[in-house]
Amino acid sequence: MTAVGLIKAVSEHVRAGVANYRLEKDGGGQKPVTVYEQLIPEEVFENDDAAEYHPLIGVTLTTLEDDDERSEATLDLTFAVYSEDADGWLDLMNLIETVRLALLKKKMLARRYRLVLPLTVELIERQPRPFFYGLMTAKYLIHQPEEERVQMNGGISTWDLRK
Image 1 (cartoon, helix red, strand yellow):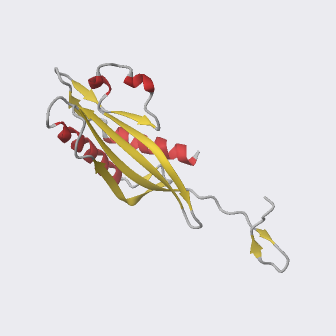
Image 2: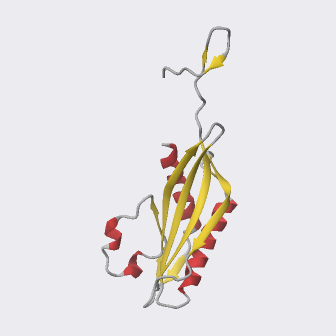
Image 3: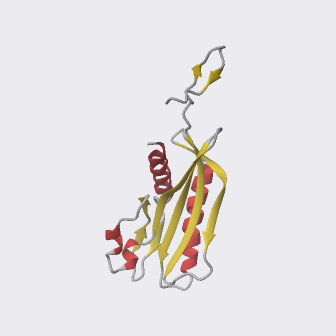
């Protein structure tokens, strides 16, 4: 549940960071940002009006890595905005910057997940207008359980290979 807890904690933090963020809809009105955990549901894309499901952020766990000293999880945050305006990339950059600042401002989430720098952002040069996409990669230290040890003859502490 550690990985699931991280996805939920980061998603909740991102939601709080963009709670007041709104993009102007083509034709008037404003649209809040929707944050999805792990997968964006297929039914979201069944709506023919792309402006209705944008802007969005998907928070996806991509890797878990353990070594002898630490455990680390990598999350990809996928950003998507829709704009008929040629300057729609500005909406994308503003949204990414809002989330970037929120993550850097609070590096410890749920008192158990610690952001590991660098926090990276990738953009593609040729955006498929009217869609604009960006990717942020965030790594977090996660809990690593205490390894079980047994006492062998002579008092040497070692691993129990039978388990």
